[in-house]
Every structure is written in structure tokens, then in C-alpha cells.
Amino acid sequence: MPSTPSTPAKTQHPTTRSLLRDVAVADLDLDPDLAPDSEHDAVLSLTPAPGGPPLRAGGPVYALVRLRGRPVATVLTTVPAGADPAHVLATAFRAQYPAHEPPTSISGGTPPRTTVVVATRERADRLGRALDSLLAQDHPDFRVVVVDNAPRTPATRDLIATHYAHSVTYLHEPVPGLATAHNRGVAATDSPVVAFTDDDVVADPRWLSALTTPFAADPRTGCVTGLILPARLTTPAQVLLESHGGFAKGFAPRLYDPAAPPADQPLFPFTAGSFGSGANMAFRTSALRAVGGFDPATGTGTPARGGDDLYAFVRILTAGRRLRYTPDALVWHHHRETWQDLRNQAYGYGAGLTAYLTAVLCRHPALLPALLAKLPRGLAYARAITAHRETPAAGVPGAHGTQQHPWPRTLSRLERRGMLYGPVGYARARWGSR
Image (tube, rainbow, N blue to C red; front, side, top):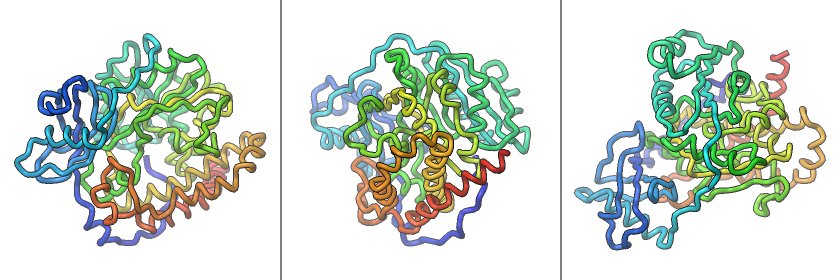
């Protein structure tokens, strides 16, 4: 969904972009019970990422590694011409993770009845791909709702009427803004859990079951987020974004409990960006409604440019509910492709960060003392996350050329400029809504 304010004039970076090679993306499933020296027999499947180009030898490959279907790691390696990609990737995984054990499952019985909300605006070509993956979920009881947000054409409505009339509910929301569109979906929900994803993802068949099972296992859980991996890495902008973290939050399950704040996050719960992302999240419907839903003055499509998901995460936690991150809930995200897209994202991330903090304090001023107590560390944290990043994490694109394409300082500056703009953007959105 498009943002409202314009981003400052772009600057070309041909040197940085010329160093970024396209990377094939693969999905590798292994059997961990087979002997370490039987790589060929241990491979259960190897496929391109959904919607991605075919795999090829003779270049870098970034692979999700599963153990009997469970996502456990990513590896990045070069597959020599003529080599078997499955053998090369399995060998690379065992070299990087020699003692990796299958993760522990979350028990909890049958996933609860769920409504999946997809907000979209003028992207019917991508929406169909996302809907096909959602309708193929193994969840036992769910429905899909598409919220058409301030459309300029009937393309989305026509797509639903022509191809999904009997399987997808169509809603029209005339007021622009991702948070407003999500609130429209929540208002139409009659299920105990409501999940959200974007129109530019392909959901793994087990995504919804994995995302919603924690609600059945723990009545205090108010929100669950999941793993987001790139479906394509074919342009310099896509490779650079994923080289520095992308949207993924790792392969270790995390439980965020306001009654037991995590020791490694002194700013908790105001480090909402570490909890997950709006492209892969679910809420207990009653808990989300109890905190007022999403703030309509935040989110893509408003002057605030973002922060709607972060606001909801913090409100759930400050209301005493738990938030859980589970890497079993996987969606493949089609990153934006151009350098200008990356610039817009950097600026929007910064704006969304401070816009959501402004929203929290405006709507819940009682949280101000807690935030002020953590402000000195918060400023250091804000600077750190936008700093010149020279060492990408292992297992993501860029590890093969760490010193060749560090995060450009221009993008860090844009993110900081966005942080300065965020409170102004939120105020503009609040004023406009009146």
C-alpha cells in the first residue's frame, strides 16, 4: 500500500549496486535421523522458493533448511557448475550447524477458529498468488477476508468476484490507511483469533496452524508472530535488504511476557520491532479489541507511514498479555525490487518507529514514566539500529561479501530523518482524521 508523504530526492549508488549479485532462493528439507555422511539420502526435497525463479548451479544460493518440515536455519553458499545443489546445500548446513537438533513443538491441540485478514490496494496481480496460498492452508477451521482499502479501480473486487467468490469475503474500506483496513477486518471477525498477512506473500501450507496453535496452548497469549523469508533475491535492493536482516526474527522461538521481562531487552516492551512484523501476525480477537485495535493514525497509507503493527504489539504487552514468536509459522515475502523502494522503506521504518511511540504516549500517557526511565538507552538503541552495518549476520545474503556491500550511510541517514518526521506524521494523521 502506498505511503502518503514523499521521500527526499534519491541519490544514485552505482558502485554499491554493481557489487550485489542476484541470489537464488531455495527450500531444502532434510531428514535428521539419517547419518551425517549420507547427504543425498537425507534430502527429502529441494525446491525453489514459492514464486521464485528456478534453481541453477554456478552461483550463490540462499536456502531455508527444514528438518522434516520444521524451519531451523538458512544457509548461503555457492553451488559450483555441474554440482548437485541438494548435496552442496546439505553439506553447507552440516558444516555450519554440526549439532543442530530438531526444534521442540508447541503442544496445544486443535488450532482455534481463525479469520485471516488481507488488506490490499491496487495490487490484484499479487493478491491472487497470496490468496491461493492461504486457501491451501492445513488449518481445520478458517476463513479469508480481503479488505480493499480506498481503491481507485474495481480490479480487486473483480478478482474476488471472478475467482474467489465462494471462498473469500470481500470488504470495501474507503478510508485509506493500513490500520483502518485492519480494523475493518477485525470488526467483521466472529472468530476467537484473527490473523493478518500482506498481499505480497506466499504462505507456507502450515503457516496458519503454526501461528494459531499457541493461542490454544496458553490462554494468556494475546499475540503470535512468525518467520518471514524472501521469496526472491534477484535485484540489488532485495539482496541488500535481506543482507541486513530483512523481516526475519531468527529461528529460535521467543516468549515475551510482561510479568517476566527478557533480560536481553532492557527497553522492553518499547523494542516492538524485535517482536515481529505485520506481514505475519495473529491476535486473540478479544485481546485486540480490548486495547482498541490498531491506531488508525498509524500505518502505511497515512502520513505516519508505519508503526501500526508495533503499536498493537506494545498495547498487547502493556495490557498484561503475552506475545510469542514462532519460526514454524512461515511466509515467503516478495521484497520490493528497486533502489527507490529501499529508500522509501528505510525512511518509512524510521517514521513508523517514532510514530508508534508517539501514538502510545498520546493514547496512554500513563506509560510515559516507564518510557522516560528507559529513554537514554532508547536513544542509543535507535542510533545503533540505523548505524553503518558492516557485518551481516551469518546465514543471510551478504555473508559471502561482507565487506563488499555494507549498509549505505545514505539509508541510515534516511531512517534517522524518518525518525524525526514520525511524530509530525502522526500528528498530521490524527488531525486529518478529525
